[in-house]
Image (cartoon, rainbow, N blue to C red):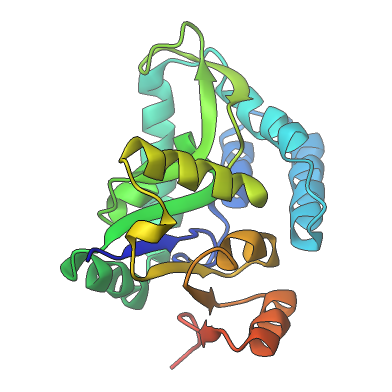
Length: 228
């Protein structure tokens, strides 16, 4: 029987927050007003860490700079972002973790609250085809048209991750019961709802709240980014 392996992304597979780093990156490019934008993303990031993020307000802020830019321009920015920020942060042990599940034939998916524009190339770097991320609206609904600067659908955040995963599984004609083991790796207490849904929750580089929860529940704790 095929198993299911789900992975959070930020601070789980990569030792940074791609969403927050993207905000700092576009400030460096001069696309947004530095003072106000940095203030906003830092506030949202603090809200996220407290488990109090307004995901819809956050998506409006982080996606607005993408609005009506050409896909070629956005692709060039993102490639620079990958080169300068993401690829240097990739850790072999995290790449190996994903590869181990793939080699076993597990059905693998990255499930992240960061939006799909930022995370699709990062998922590609891990060799993971299936990505569940916050969706980005396009002008006419076509995949290669300009972005409107707004999110769409159910955000893959907190309980929304369960909704999105179950919708994806249903599209494959599957449910949780079709897997002997379902794994979810995450660092964040925001992901406790999905961690409690799988058979094998793994608190990975966990924040203090999740670490305490995992210890109380007897969950496996995995620290990928500790210095050797």
